Length: 325
Ligand code: HSE
Image (cartoon, rainbow, N blue to C red; front, side):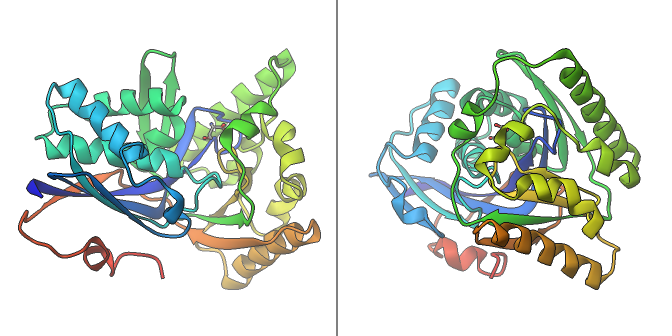
């Protein structure tokens, strides 16, 4: 191995936040770390749950995305040593593929002296992912509002309210974004479209102005969640009733199956425990096992550091103090 040794930390994300389909995203305090260095021969080592199944040859997503950066920058780095650790559950609606894409773009760009701007990386990431919501949040951190016309994605970042916390319920089954997008209709009626424009706009305004009291009504959606409900038993009941159990609002996280609730962090421990119980009990009543996690919004996007190229400390030793137990 030779040349700079780059370590990137990239957050998970939740997309849509209810009504903002393919438009709103928020970074969450759950991470993927990617280490990259030029090498004589490509090696890819992945740590973390479910990571043993990911390809360890040049068909690996992170390797392929890195090569796109080198191509765009007009340089050649055909062989890479890549190590990664991912604590983001895969295919659950927490943006694991977006984190991998953003992490790979940022690592590869840093490896060759950062010739591409963050905006350029965001454009590439959006094209690869097919929508800007998850990649925007993982790239820039906080809450990201973005619009993509198939050519260019524009975005504005909003600082999350300091008392905003989230509780997610992650079902034990996987649901591909492709399958969850397949459940959507080709057309919408005008009343539903107007409903969503109103809620999504209100949600952005409420999050910008710190109006946590409006989240409950602003997170409602008629564009995708009603159609996806059949794929996630218990979801409709959680979305309808979470605010009676201590949540500010609730939504399907991205394409699911994870369900995310927004919570006022200053609420009591017993109210938080009740919400957790409500989520787990509602899913259990449908025969669905799930795991809950409290995930504060994360203010930072992907960040990279350059390590001493002669330092051979393994990735897991470098990040041990930061990973979730
Ligand atoms: N906005 C996307 C969707 C996010 O809901 O399909 C999932 O990747």
